[in-house]
Length: 319
Length: 260
Image (cartoon, rainbow over all chains, first blue to last red; front, top):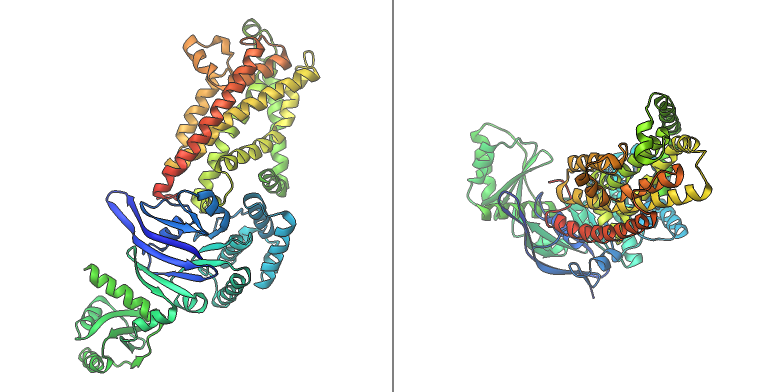
């Protein structure tokens, strides 16, 4: 049984010109699966999640969530879902405490009995070490803590399917790790399906059973994180450590035979190519031409590299 | 729950809470001063009571309830749209229509708390004509008319989803309703075409009946007809509001609920 099925979803916005935000998206997510939607900014991930959460209407295509049609059975879909959007900073009542906010949302809008809601809130916050913040006003929380409240709000009514739009945004690495681990075990324990969007490759690798890569509204890949990485293992990566990348240098590097993409990450420049040995020689020559000494190495491609390669190949296709 | 939420927020800031009540007392006091300077004979000829203080206080009360009924839900939606909370609200199965109405009710309860002192001044000024039955029937008519007007509020709230900025639309109707319903100027003094428009608004009957039952003013028509008109308006506006809320939400979702 599938928790989510999408069949040929298309979403077009009519602004000054017609914008196709989603283009023929088809995939299934099994019950209990943690499914990640990856892609660069503006790829269509949030649009897709909003359609599945009945917040947007698709232009074409159909989808079911929890066995209910998102267009014909909106109310039924809403009964089985949880949702955490990206706007966490102000999306709860400032002057209420975390506990009061969670009580209000779970009881008033989700009909969870008061006693049950209290127990669940206590249990979730203690699992993620958030007890001390429970009686703080929402306005007094940090950005990451607010984000955490929004994630808790999405699961406190124990939905069958939970949509989390960039759940670890604004969280520090340690908290993000703790939340990921909690979500994974919570989903397993409750049989909850999670569909999350992220730019964070580490997050996708740690928590997701499968991922879908979306770019320019189109589904480019679907499979496990390992399969995603394997797709690009044919590619090799040459890294120039602590190197400034400007448009001229980028153009010169891209002009080297066999180089398919150039990106910058953590102060290092990464060059994606089919054969690193061939490219290394040209890179050395180039560095010598411009009179720069730098540490150049061949490295194992990561999931982040796969992401960059996918985005790169898509933009090349676009041109 | 919406009332609980508002009450928590309201009473948490005690100095602010106290000053809201003091403001209400102050308005009541000003009305006492105002009454001394007003020629009441004109009022006696048109509505059958010379009690201008009570006339104005009940008008102000209705102005307050009208503002709450028509605008509070739209204001809630405006806030939720800009904060992003609207996504959570609209992904929940809670009826949109009842979400709007419960927010209006919560705000109406809140604003009524602050109006009690001033309202009491109004009642004190009607001590000659006041009875338990009169105040009960008057408040019942008030509640019905505010409930009917809340349906306008539901439509305004849903308009926010579609058009994002409806402050000017609200401002226009708010002012127009004040003049058309006899809130501050006796309804009988309005030209006939304006009176016809006024008949279509539930505030006209609610306010007229409150004044009639509490101040013993002459009703605009036999009160049985006014009750009937109020019930019909409440029913018709509820149906219209439910339909409009669903229709506007569907349209808004074509483009997304957020500010674009």
